Image (tube, rainbow, N blue to C red; front, top):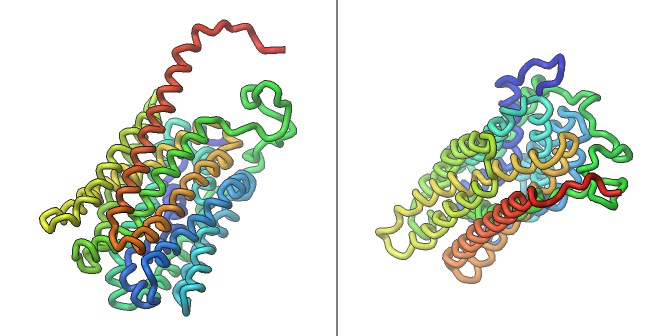
Length: 424
């Protein structure tokens, strides 16, 4: 429930949470939307362009667990300054980058700035939003990522053609600064009572398996399963986010603006789907892994359509339903895995559990563009890359089915186990 003395959370907090999720990946989305212009200006190969996103998400992946713990300890405004300030610095550095090396450095800063977004926003939701509304709030704030993608796909191709891609990125940096000022003025600061309990005073015995008497309790297996699902779907989702405009431009013959609109369609559907899937997760008894299995199937159909679209000119239309399914399924997975991770642990470990899932998510994010870029450079075709994405989605569906079956099997056998009381 909302802490005593605090007003119920309102639209200002929701705006801050959504903006926090949006500003981190905005640089990656903007470069993706303007990929033909960036590649031409810096004379990059497809693999080099894919490495930009890979570097960002690799930095986020390797720092996710530790920064998740920091999110449990630092004040909310301090976290805002780190995340928004990192995004601004990354954009300004990218705007003035004289060569590819400096642009890579900008992507490193981008990764450091955005990695705290999920742990920090999840913690604010856990602290300031009533329990029955948390999943819905999580869905809306997660839609901030797709809001950034939507804005990037709709505006950056035209701005890049009109002003140049560097100026377009600099304009975005100014907008992020304004959002930081708004967030600083409206976000509720963490209270002293919201600090996690010291690990030397362990909580309920259920947090510690038999034989463990102290130290940090292990993360529940279900959190690790959600992290694995996030990694598998993250690979495919980010490969599509980064390369879908370039694929539509080169393979299907769309112009730069129309090609950028493919990710805008995916982002628009992604915004709605994240909110809708979050409401489903709010229902009593909602099964996260059952939802993941269905979403993985939809994402697999999307990847299959991308494999088929270039085979004949009459099939080029398939890129649009593929973008819709990409937004409705692959881009909404993070809502399920984040909500599931929040439910699996007590309030004082939300940042840590989110960090574990975020690590899996960003591991997939950094792998997707790199693998797709390398395959594209060596094969000259997107087909092999999309086929790999299809396999990853199917693997996520299989994982979800297996975990759900195992959980139901354990639940079914529980009543047969005699209750002998705590072991001595």
